[in-house]
Length: 377
Length: 156
Image (tube, rainbow over all chains, first blue to last red):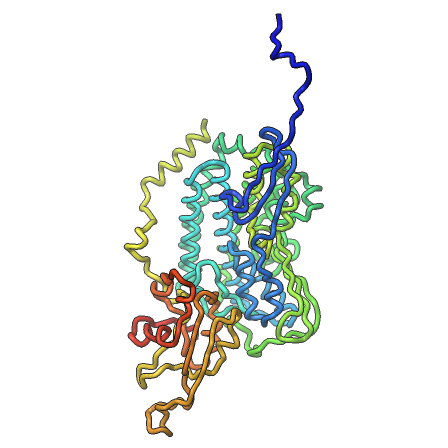
């Protein structure tokens, strides 16, 4: 005799339900809203909504001169403000044809790589929380990040919004004990990376949560215009520092870390290994650092650029951060457009999330390491 | 299992380290000399008047237009029987700390070293219940420097 319950007269019809996530949600890393179409626990579709943090930073830059725009570039990518500033000032320098003194370039390189470290620390900490390590990884990462920020504060006075790079060089000279302090910070950072590596990488629970989740193929990643560690995790060896060098990157040795599977775990490993490479770059920079001027000898007080257009891209922690600038000969850009890596990386969110559980959607979003102020600008 | 043990060993080893946190409102970290909070006007202790002549340089250079400057003839100028060499002097000055983005440009453009970024904790702990209280007038901007409480670092 069979039970009636096991043999229904007709099949159940199920309907996807929509789950709203954000804009005020701790795991969206900012004000990002996505609506998940959920079939039970499985995500069937993702509808992202961006624009909650739109401030019109690009348009604001068009109303003010080149020095005033630097502060707004800080705020487009606040976790790696030095890298954002670098793209902007280098675009203006290219437009105006300004030669930057050697010492200023080395210091820029050191600060940008340190900023990459602090940004990746932020990723490791927040990603650990997404996976479910509660606060441990977050506190470890923030401990090291604060050490780096202390150094930034000693040099340029602010912990996040530096406005330290200027067109032509730097705003002022670094502190006298700069080299010794950077060595201190690097020692502490290396310890911090090892702590986080030990806490997360080999952990079986962490691996079970991250391996095989959020897979994207190399071809798809290129089609979506992804860049940075998210692209390199798919196996594409593309690093603007190596392929389209700026500053003195051709003169230092470093490896471009690539993954194989393009899943969440690979994106994590890529960033983790990249931090060791950053330390390697900084150590080589410190050896090459010579005393000298930090601004060109001949600089007009009010900078005017010749008419023209320029696109300059650099490798920010999240990928290609480009600045496209059109000048009509005045002291302010006629058009200033920021190509943000986060926006392009975020496009692939649907491809990576569909088919996984709701809890993994959080992981995928965390693994592409978005900064919403850079997405919306 | 091996990975889990490694995780526990990592957390275990950090128990033995010195804590890096502070009881914030009770104890304050020492700020570096170059620390940047909000801009302040500086007081010339020799002739007992502000350095500022009200030349509008900072007002024009400010990216967020947070300053309002008005100048007047200096009543203490030598031609008026005083001791000051400043022909013009600041009359009224407002800085809206709610708008200021602490970019240091006003300090850079000032020809008289008359404005500087507050590098003490008083600049960081400036929360108010009303945002109009963040608009500082001349007296408020000068009072700390006049009392000798701050010595802002100005880039050479």
